[in-house]
Length: 191
Image (tube, rainbow, N blue to C red; front, side):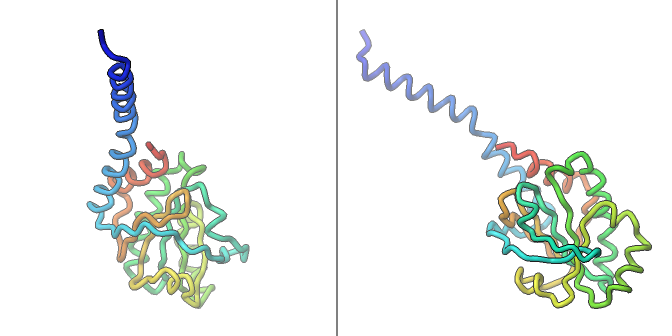
């Protein structure tokens, strides 16, 4: 005859084992995302992003908090920065690859340009940029200062809750299977 306390113990152990079988998605999700971010040479940040207000090229104001619930690819760049210009095509390709995820993903490119006409001319030569991302200006560098940006281009990955997951100083090849996998993992929240 098995005592009742032993039966309760067996049931509790069974429930704990079932929780372990269901829970690994969280651990493997984080492990996979963080190992992929490290492979892309990202710096883990894990802090809330400060809310900020910017204006798109049509003058319409928006805040980062307007995109809460989406994974945000926030890129700081300038037209006078050659690595920034070189990085843009790979960003466009990543955005195109994530087209089906538009409800859960947004790419925001914030230019540190003083001359809106020069910026307009540059963007006119790359119409695919305008189709695939939100373009804004930060001519005074307020956002770059607030984030502590040290080098352009710089990219921040922000999760659905407004937490900065990672920071990437200097240009990256965003048109890679690795980058796509990172964003799909974050978007799909396999927790």
